[in-house]
Image 1 (spheres, rainbow, N blue to C red):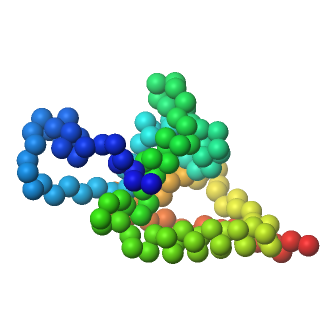
Image 2: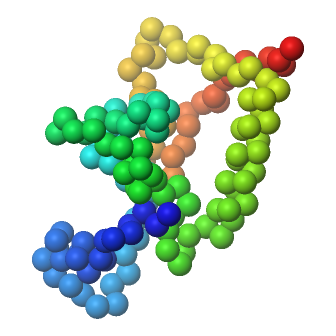
Length: 145
């Protein structure tokens, strides 16, 4: 689904800069969009998978539906420059996660300490184009019986 479906690029530019310049190259990173509280709720910087089932609370108190959030979920970019491997990656992801959860119980290891409690859920990065984790994500995997 095109994340910017229904938006006119010239309209977006004119609203933010009050000018429309022809032949303007516009680039963006998905990270600021994915961390936007207006798009993904007041807890956008926290890992909360239930928002994709129940929805999320917007800063103004209204409910953001999962369908509305899907509109702004753009990990593979959009348009003519989107990742050409998107469909293969999504297929592999669905097969991997489905198979993993079918045969194994997975639990995140509690590696946070009291001093570490202020660390945000989303990796901190100096760049909005790349998210870098500061350490490994530890998990316990047990075969189901």
